[in-house]
Image (cartoon, rainbow, N blue to C red; front, top):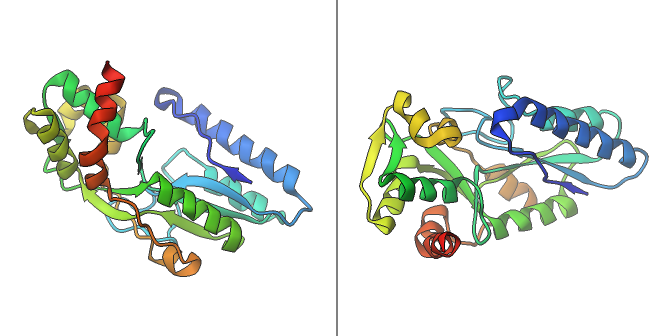
Amino acid sequence: MIHTAFIHDFSNYGPAAEADRRAIETIGAVLLGFDRPLIVTSGSLVVAPGRIATEDDATSPNFPRKSEEAALAIASRGVRVSVVRLAPSVHGKGDHGFVPRLIALAREKGVSAYVEDGLNRWPGVHRLDAARLYRLALEKGSAGARYHGVADEGVPAREIAAVIGRRLHVPVVSKSREAAADHFGWIGQFFAMDGPASSAQTRTRLGWQPTQPGLLADLDANYFEQVELAAD
């Protein structure tokens, strides 16, 4: 079984995290006594802010999402569970997440912005590479293991903003942390985070090798036609 669902309601994040915990516990209860793998999905962004996170790192205790804690709890009861931590940007066709929101904001406000010096880093992974990782984790994964769905270890935020600005023909500007909340809304707290992550152990253990375009190349080549169609 693969659990990827999460209620991305950032105005009620605590209740969303609690619902996720209950869902994992319920799935785990069904799998008790069966030697069937379960993959629980988490995120890489908040594992080790400010340095390159690895699979050995635990998630930040300050983050309300408790997916990994719930996974460990059911693992202790004998469920064969592992965790896939996805990069914050899972990009590619059908993406409705962070990058499309940044493009929409740039169109709406007439500038493509980043926070302060824009050197904070965002990992990324193409959706097809992520899908292959889930398959490999089901086939080869170890109970209790953590795997990183990360192809780009960390793309500087200002480089993402630069591609958006160039493609939309709008200025690329810096926003202070104080101004970022008003400019970006809910996405601002995430776009300002520095959360690079490595997938070296994942690649070695599972034989996973990303082959799809990286975040910047995919953004430049494919996203703006999708955004135009959505706007029409």
